[in-house]
Image (cartoon, rainbow over all chains, first blue to last red; front, side, top):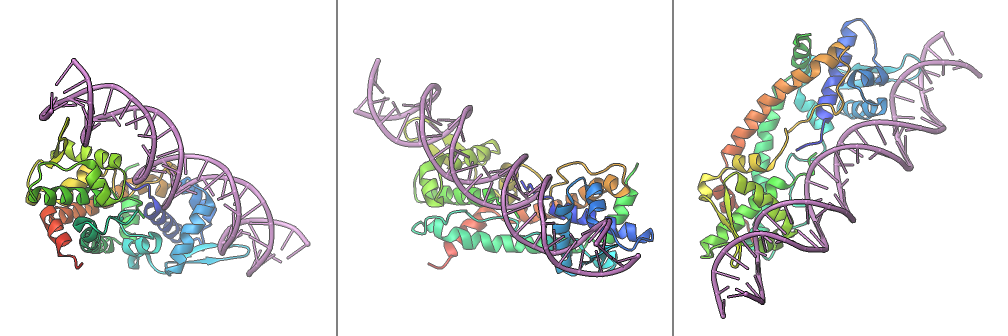
Amino acid sequence: MSANSRLTIAAHALAWIGLYQRQGHEVATSEQIATSANTNPVVIRRLLGELRKAGLVQSRRGVGAGWSLARELESMTLLDVYEAVEPGPLFAMHRTTPDQGCVVGHGIQPAMQGIYEGIEETLRQELARVTLENVLRDVLAAPR
Amino acid sequence: MSANSRLTIAAHALAWIGLYQRQGHEVATSEQIATSANTNPVVIRRLLGELRKAGLVQSRRGVGAGWSLARELESMTLLDVYEAVEPGPLFAMHRTTPDQGCVVGHGIQPAMQGIYEGIEETLRQELARVTLENVLRDVLAAPR
DNA sequence: AGCCGTCGTAACAATTAATGTTGCGACAGC
DNA sequence: GCTGTCGCAACATTAATTGTTACGACGGCT
């Protein structure tokens, strides 16, 4: 389905910054992260900009500018990242409103809405169980 | 995120056929369903074609052609529909492979893969708890 | 046998979302 | 001032979905 890698890239960036800071550096630049993620710095800046709105990272400007974590990786969950970075709902409704004169056409949207809400809630709970610290640990555990 | 209404439309179609059959009709045409869903008949045929592959519906050709359920709505879950209709995974990886020379770039994909698999499994369980009979009931319960 | 309505499918267009790219001003330390 | 990086806007590219048109295949009917 989704041509949507925002959550993956955002997790990548956070793990990268976290590791880099543990190696003694103050800030990471969007260009460094972009190189690691094999994408464009602006893409990273956009994404980190949303994470900043959510209070997960900070940015500094001027010389020696760059990005740093606003809190510890242990205190961030994938749910925090997901909510910061994913705009809409998981499943979409019809793109044009169905025939309201038809019983099914009329009732289908509220019905699916209710069902989808329950499912998304479960998804959130799952995402909330994974911290970015978990992610970084898994990253470092990968066989070389 | 997803500009993806396939699951919604497929559920719509199944509920429509199910209700229509309960009203005594043998088969439903793609045009009738398309009218209710406010879309093009070909879109419906494509979708129902996938549901047929999965054994959820049947089609007849010739005069009096159309679609009918291959089993009862009680025995179909949203998971059946989801698997029939959704191609890829919920969350995507990077579109270009990250820098394998970087520790994070190297470990991020296996790490996220593992995490995502667990989450998708939970999603499946949730989808499996909702039958199309539930959906139709909710549809009919909508206030007019 | 011929007619008719509907499926089956391919080909293509239109729409939309995400991603990539370029450019340039703003900022802040040197 | 000079430098490196962010901030942001504008635009291009890519990819996926959805919509549309067209036409052959089918199969019951008269």
